[in-house]
Length: 262
Image 1 (cartoon, rainbow, N blue to C red):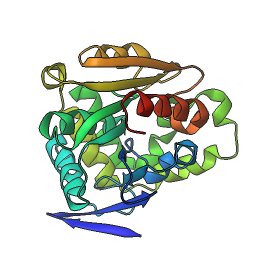
Image 2: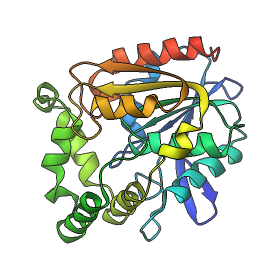
Image 3: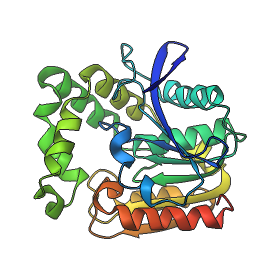
């Protein structure tokens, strides 16, 4: 278990693969921890330095008092990569992790050579929607909203599988303070202008059954970035790396070869 003690927050992270391998960094969605990528990583080419972490308020990272800003989440990622001596990484971010990817690519071109923005957008939802969710979570806990969240996360066939129960448990066990804090960060983020100024190899991935960031929203964000392409995984919801890890890893592997990272 590894903890990076950064300014004001302790970030739990994990590394797999050789220390001198080409770095690929993974950032999770709202309500999940770094196990989000468990099924994908073993399917990627050998020799990569695979880095994943729990953002603040999630998993085994510390949970500072919220609300959080997207700037703080981007800075956490930036400081973690500086701590690990990472440059020229492919940054893979899903949902809020994809927003962190966009922010970091704008801020630190030396750290991000290419990015995968999965099930995300330059702007997600409305301030009113996030305000209502924060209020509901603070009043009744995450479990009060988990049914609706999980319906957006997963297509119906996956919700009938036994392993689905583990994802419910992961969601409901996240700290309320951390979950609400990250909701506030998403609420205050509009990356349309900065993301439209990006020019770097970018793969945008969407799930056809995604109820949180529908395919058209992901495609719209991809079109902001010069050098991007869009891929749709059919039959998957908001977390296609969980539902369709084989297809997800194939897309990611192809992108890594395209960008000369393998």
